[in-house]
Length: 313
Image (cartoon, rainbow, N blue to C red):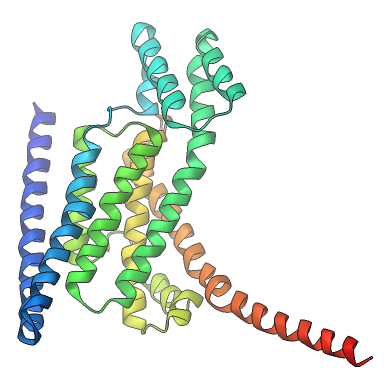
């Protein structure tokens, strides 16, 4: 009974936040549309069409698409016994064969795990985590970086809201696509509530050490390379960090088979993991935006000097 009550309130909160997001987005979009309409009616119509296209493709489609994925998690496999354990092992094996790019040798290896008795679940979990985790981390890293850039550079609430919602709804869908399954209804709704809350307040400040985050964002190579001011850099960093936490929680729902960890421990783990990745994102800018162009420039200049010197001799 308690579980039903929790799920009911989660649904109510999700629907309420969705309504608030739609109303806020519509209000801001109408305001911008009217400004464009003062210049030309075609610009206003084109803007509204673009907004509808982005909402349908970036929010509605990813949201609905997730619910078609089967519900599963490695924790379920780890806890199962007897017939249930065999069923979960078979489901994970099917997910690996259908959703992961494997060599023929790896495919045969996965199939052979089903014949290993008590070792089957451990072998499958280890193999799955080893093949899936790097791909998930790459997807999460790219999404968080895009979130930072979009919300740091943009000075418009409509673009911020669309950027945040689109990036995070799409990321949840990509995580489920890569894994081949999704968290439970309650867990997925919880993630969506987090995304919608983040979209409305432009960042979830829970458990964040802003004293450490603000200088990290404002003094980062990526922030400086993009030429953004301190306030915008901090906003982008807060949003990127929240995206990373949401993704870490989603990963833990699906890939964490350690049943000894409490919910509080997983939350702390997600924050620590997110902060480390955020540091890497902000530091990466020095290579992509600063060091590499400088190296290329002076490297070409040095090559030209060597060629001219050789020609003179």
